[in-house]
Length: 146
Image (cartoon, rainbow, N blue to C red; front, side, top):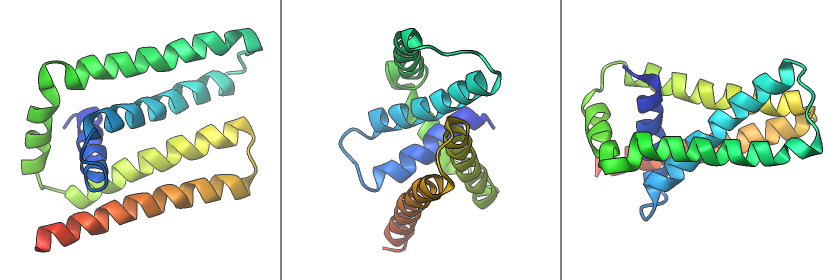
């Protein structure tokens, strides 16, 4: 199992419950933000000095990540075969979903912790994430029963 592809499939599945118009792009942006959180956290934790002049570099980085994700997932509609591949594979789905949630939460928490945000804000943001994901999960379960 390719975790990166499975991450795309699970985020796409969750977003599809609430956004059927541009789900693919919403998924690409979500994954790109998570990757940016990871890269930025690594840069900040490695004591690399960042100046205001570096803001253009980070803007370019996020656009480059979105571009790479576009070519990996959306170019020539590759995402369609990926969604089919992971739709059929139900083995250990709960554990895999838990792994995806853990990745999202750890990426977000580490990013905000390294930025020095107060615990209260970090907890609120993580709770909002959790509620959004829970809502999508419950809607998908409801749609499966119908």
